[in-house]
Length: 112
Image (tube, rainbow, N blue to C red; front, side, top):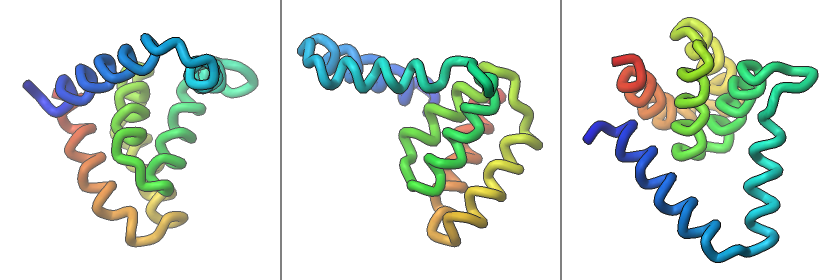
């Protein structure tokens, strides 16, 4: 199983368990997240790139993987992703570099 498959399988399994509990607050939070990334004044691609950059600065590897997957689905190029990587590392500082390494590995796997 690839790192992409492993991440996606685990995420789907655990999100399913979370939503099975039928907790109103958690369901609304998930819904808010979904709706926030829907196309509006900004298209979905731009929103995912913003999400990727924010996730890198916040150093959330799961979030980075999720947004990389969405970026890949939306046809974001490697050059575009690396521009986001550069901005995120500039804003977040060198502490973001370990997350950059894992992000590059995940992006490469997505592009196989």
